[in-house]
Image 1 (cartoon, rainbow, N blue to C red):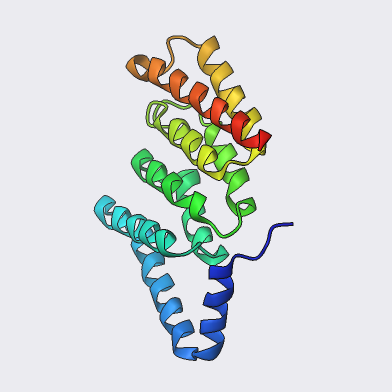
Image 2 (image 1 turned 135 degrees about the horizontal axis):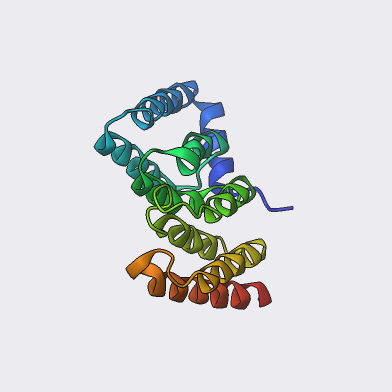
Length: 176
């Protein structure tokens, strides 16, 4: 069981002591929800970037993470999926994001995966999480790449190198 993050505790304490903080947080979530639902790419980028900046200040709560997960799974633009992978490791609880990231790593479709970019970014997110449960899925991704040498064209070699690097990082971190 993971310890409850101090930042999440302090955030909850602030909301309890100041009901206006809760209202402001709800307003912000509603705005982000609307921006993420936009058909405009730049609007969605701005929303994901705002979530990234928020995650740099404090761990993201479950409700905030839940706003992003549908976009990792099925956003119409693979670039948004890649940006979401940069935010998810900032979750207050890695269990909220581990399985969705692993699922995104299994996307082999050239279009929805951005020619392999999404799985590559997922590898980076799994490395940042430093959770040994991400090791086997990254190894499976590397095996896929090695068994499909023509997959993803010019990106193939860099995708293999990134997967190998992440496997090394996860093995090192899981020994600690």
